[in-house]
Picture 1 (spheres, rainbow, N blue to C red):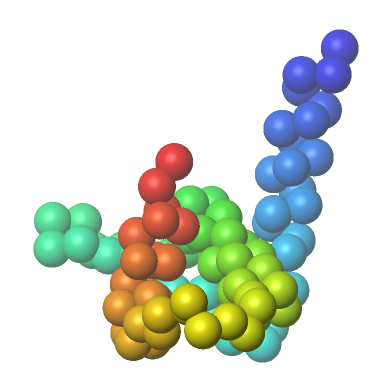
Picture 2: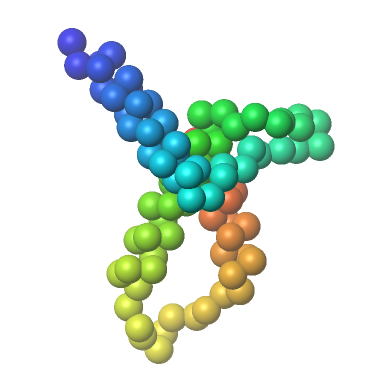
Length: 87
């Protein structure tokens, strides 16, 4: 009896979260050479929510230690983008 309400609730939560995030920064639809998109899908919304969660977690709890190696922001964003769309 709980299998249908749980995904529906998660879908609603992600949709609302992405909508709230889009008020600050517009969502960007993923594109590829063979599949150009002009509208955001649920996959784009969930990827945006994942990236927001990951950014918050890494910025808030990252320890300041000497054994940490800093990587360029562009490389980090590429990896984040690729992982956010992996399902």
